[in-house]
Image (cartoon, rainbow, N blue to C red):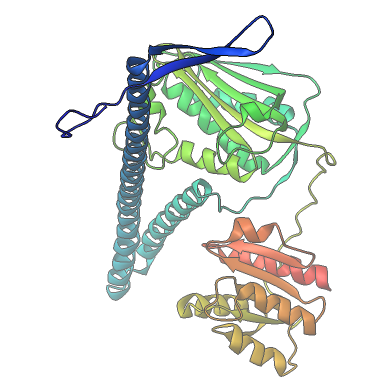
Length: 453
């Protein structure tokens, strides 16, 4: 309705009913009209609609703000983890490099002084530092799920039963070891050595969580996990799993510690009493094997860590073949093509192969190797780094070489891609992970050439 002066208007709402009025003959004699004011109701509905629209906008903005905050938090946590990882690596590797450089410096001084009889002591020190560095990179590759595994059908029950005495000796007399092993548990496909290492590591951690002694219960059971049980992004598909659990009645972990327990270099132990890599290595091994980890812990009551590995329906494990003795020198005059882009590694490796009696051809990359192979010179074994620069890389080189020389034995050497490459190794192909000893190299070479003979 407009105001008399036309300056403004007010909106009203009426609910009106129109009903005809009929006479005795059924003819419409008039119209009955009834109405009532519903302006307040309409205004309330309009206010509610505007409020809902405002709330939806506020919820949308708040959701966007929360997502931005969550992303910022994830990024901050990621950078914190990277910083912790980088700091831990730098600390450990600097110590190891100091051990190597210090030992080599003393070797040089003793040689200059003519005190040759003291050289071995320093060389042994350098070698120990190298082994610690190799162990560190192995643990980091395990966490990154890129370590080299040798998966075999494994009976987890027999593995645990066979380790009981060793675990008991490792944790000491103050800790009681109990087993709960289910009958007729299926096999798992995993690296048995890594599973043993994981189990021992968990038991030692449990021991450390019980400074006054206690009990460790190790159980192996077969369970079925459904889609509802497997909600994390990197969880495996539902199915049958073998659960290997280690439970203690120690001090337990609060939620803020438990949230970081599997991060590399995270540790609650005093400096010098732990690297913080044990649980992260287990985490990587389990996930690389297609399984998952679950952990529960209550402060003052203890911790339970459960490893779930998919049940394997393949053939049972077979006994390992006896190891063939390594001859000091190969006298057959066979030829090895060594392809390695690092000159220092290539030089000393070629010298060691020559000492072992092999004729050695050298190439710095795939192109040089292909040029040698195109000359139709005799090559009995290709030893190539996987990560060669340019094209072809080591794996492509092996494929090209075998296309023109069917049955050519190939030994891959790598410092990185072992876990992914090993799944595709075929007959007449082996893998050697850096850093390796030359005795190990010689053994691999002999085994490949013996099989090819």
